[in-house]
Amino acid sequence: MECTRCRAAFVGADGRCPRCDGSPQQSAPDPYAPPSSQPPQAPGAPYGQAPYGQTPYAGRPGYGQAQAPQGQTPYGQAPYGQDPYGQAPQGQDPYGQAPQGQAPYGQAPYGQAPGMYPPPAAPHAPYGMGPGMMPPRPPARLSGLSTAVTVLFAVMAVLALLRVVADYRLYDALGSIWTTDLAEAESIDDFRRISILLLFLGFLAAAPVFLVWFYKARANAEGLAPGRLRHSRGMAIGAWFIPFANWWIPKAMADDIAAASQGTPRPTGLGVINAWWACWVVSSVLAGFGWPMYASAMDDHNPSLEGARTASLILMGSNLALLAAAVCGLLMVRAVSALQDARPRY
Image 1 (spheres, helix red, strand yellow):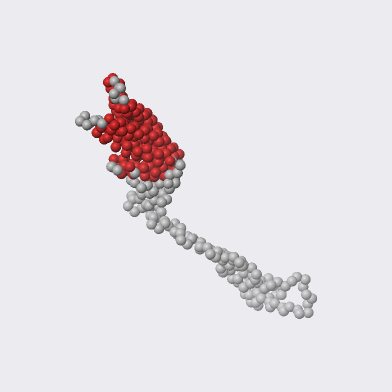
Image 2 (tube, one colour; image 1 turned 90 degrees about the vertical axis):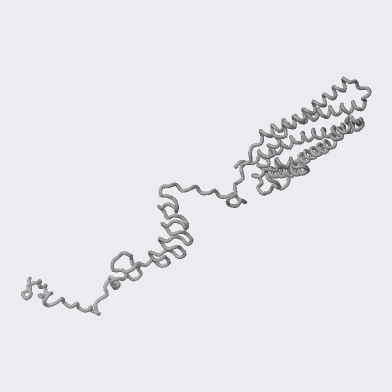
């Protein structure tokens, strides 16, 4: 029924208008009423706060800021000891930024036009070498050269043996000169001249090939043991032409080559090197004494048969030492070449 006073609201069952008379007063609870079977409800939380014992929720209007459960990191913050979200770890460049000293992402380095490929990075120096130093080269194969030197040294051994036979025939002929006819003497002299010429030609053929092998072996040793060799690479050839020094410098270089090929400070198990060098020095010294003595004994103005026989013996010993040096030399060349060819390539 419409209120007759305000004409804007309807009266209730008690005849009261909620607009004109107001809401009815709530009666006080009866203290003598029997208890209800339902437990009393807790009063609601104030507006803007979560109920007691519950965690406020982020994003819900009216509940303020979100809080994480007990023992956990609050929402929006990184765990303890870790970098905040959106920041790079300590000591690293921030996310989205280029490392220090480099051009920003998407931009060309300084001095380089956009779209150009960057220059290749310089290779790192191997361990034990400073920056800017050339890395060691891999050892070159010596099998082909060692075969050539082996053949030529074998030929030299045969020619040295012919010289020994020629010197012995001369020594024997000088001892029985009164019983030797002219034809036999000329035959002995011709054989001796031919043996000298053949040995000289064999030496001219073998020496350059051996020097090339010696130089390459020295170059390989420099790559196998950098900084541990006593003489420069050029001395592998030049040392042979220095008077008196050519009696010990090539031997020292041969020892360094053998040690570098074995990977040890000193060569071990290569006594053939000492034998080769000893035979070569003995042959050179005996030839240095024998040839002047023979030339003086065969002088037309003052010939000496005893002096010629002594010179022939000395030259025979020189050629025997040269034969032994050729045999030991080819064994040395094959041993060192095998050691270097067995080293790994890189």
